[in-house]
Length: 263
Image 1 (cartoon, rainbow, N blue to C red):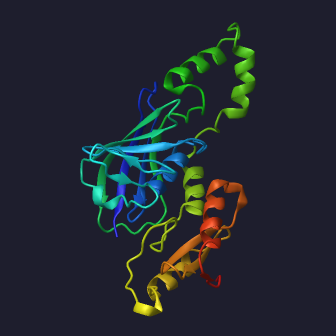
Image 2 (tube, helix red, strand yellow; image 1 turned 90 degrees about the horizontal axis):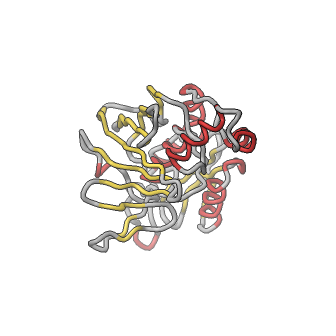
Image 3 (cartoon, rainbow, N blue to C red; image 1 turned 180 degrees about the vertical axis):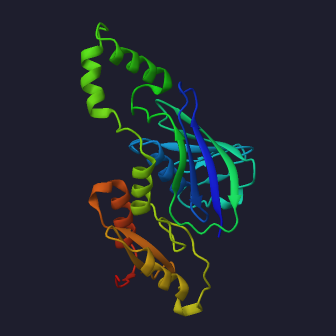
């Protein structure tokens, strides 16, 4: 197992806003998207995409993006590992209206890393406001908030009270990711496991993955076996996480399954 060490900076943010975060291997680009959402306190309301060198618009939520060579990628199924090389720089774009560009630098790879939860190790700058018009709009809002004589001050003050994220805390972010983004080898969302087919008996499930799943369950995550695909999957139990809960429940209800006992 490996651990990837990323530095992610919001393009055009003044003063600079960046996070350094370590993430485990064998996660999808969609799972990396979830990590970045929590690192910058975005609300996951909008579409996103990753842009990798030489690949173009690689992938985004809900649908694959067709590149010039007609290759279709899906962030929910594509593991990040084949693309991770020392010195890699790529981009993550969130909200195609505000168009928040994040520059992602892979600063290191620890081949002996065993962490299964993302961890923020360093940061600079406060998280920005959703739906404010991107970095330029954010600057305008902050100037108006700091100037009581600005005609928009009162209106923006009330809007910002509802939209402004809490002061960023690496400790709080790490605790949240440890609870909600713990990535077992047995897949959080749609990661294909190594398995062998059992002929007419259907796919076989790795006993190791079944055993491992007992350590990965929590108050908000349960494990089950997708008997159709031969995969151990995690089921989100907390309705407050919105579309993550809806997606995992839909996947669970769509397959023949065996719920694993909870420790």
